[in-house]
Image (cartoon, rainbow over all chains, first blue to last red; front, side):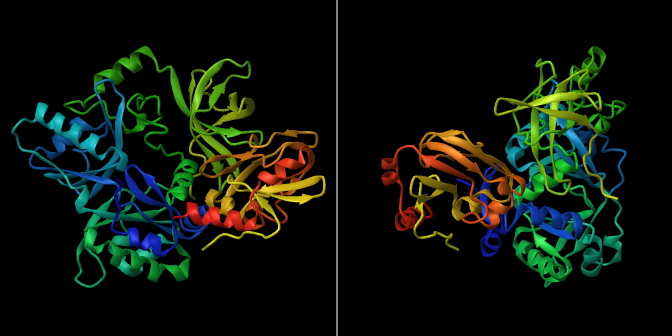
Amino acid sequence: MTKRTPLYAKHIELGATMMPFGGWDMPLRYSSERAEHMAVRTAMGLFDVSHMGEIMLEGADACALADRLVTNDVQQCRAGQALYACMLNEQGGIVDDLVAYKISPDSVMLCVNASNIDKDYAWVCRVADAEFRGEAVRVANMSDRYAQVALQGPRAPALAERLFGSPIAALGRYYFTTCALPFAGSPAGIVARTGYTGEDGFEIFCAPENAVALWDLLLKEGSADGLVPCGLSARDTLRLEAGMCLYGNDIDDTTSPLEAGLGWTIRFDKPHGFVGMEALQKQKAEGIKRKLVGLELLERGIARHGYAVTAPSGEPIGAVSSGTFAPYLEKPIAMAYVDLPHNQIGSEVRVTVRDRPLAARVVKLPFYKRK
Amino acid sequence: MPSKVIPGLKYTKEHEWARIEGEHATIGITDHAQAQLGDVVYVEIPGAGGELTQNKTFGVVESVKAVSDLFAPLSGTVVEANERPVNTPELLNQDPYGNAWLIKIKIKNTSEVGELLDASAYESYLAEISK
């Protein structure tokens, strides 16, 4: 049975085409997904991301547990700082990619992918039980206690300033704060300067019972400046243009962050290491055999997940992990794993689309970077 | 909002339409089809001389999210392929029954026309699948 977010009725009211995603009934698009995509690049868009999961780590060992779980360094973050990281299994494969919010030295919230909530919670509990048995950290799956919306686009900071005030609008990238939401009752919320679109913007967490009021307020106050509701289709094309990975497509528990171009999230110097570190060190020593790259198709056609990638000779060298026709860039783009040395920028490859090899070229990621 | 169904055209359950003109038929996708697809970004259709077999795929329409096969309503030979939706895929969303017709064929077997749905049968079918 698919689950519904607190904003389900809003999506129906707005005429959204709904689709199941990760066990949730989510809006795919409201009108034209291209228009929604362009709104985020040129004005602003509003996304319901309440399906995402939240796992709380609380207690004196909250940061210590977080640091064992993920590749990046939570301990050295300031309170109020968020961190993108990978959570690995012992083989160095990616259990999930996530954002860790260091609320305080005793409190870390992991925001995880909707499709992985149960898997991630079981994994976190397993590591906590094995390594912090009975000690000073409690793990809780708080996913049902949070709704979340994402306000993304170049005009988002101005709207945030108007509604939330200057301190919020002045939040640095990947910083967050708790605040009183600006409507009746002033309920608590968390505003983070994070996002999954390649634009500036905010992700706002609140209690489920406040989600509708928050959504309505943002749309009411933002419409005059071009704010539109945006669905999962636009979310996918935006993140792909921005070169961001989608779990299940580009990364999964068989892919290593070293292969996926996520080496920048790895801190090998953490004093107590992290689960999967030894496996990554072994991979580094032996040499990575394949890498996730960006591709631009040079002929008419669209590359999709699973399509074969070959060298011009016809030799199989990999497969597409994500692909689409980029609405803002107006060209077919893809991410694909290719065997070394074909991962070099500028390499000529072929993508097999319905039995035809189409010419493509390896390009630098991200495809799109905001000014 | 119910999708547009043009009287006088023939339809299939795969959401293609055919305008029968003597020995020829003009073929396209219905308003329901383009609404389901979302923004069309790529169209692949056979050129003149291409052969269609009823109910078999003859091309592809791609939206942002997915690849959709085009199923031949009738068997025949392509006499003309329409460049306009190929060059401007969004035309399929804007004008699926008009400027974004896909191909014109010479019908191989006119008895196949009897197997197609008329406008009211297609409307009933749409109502049935929307429940």
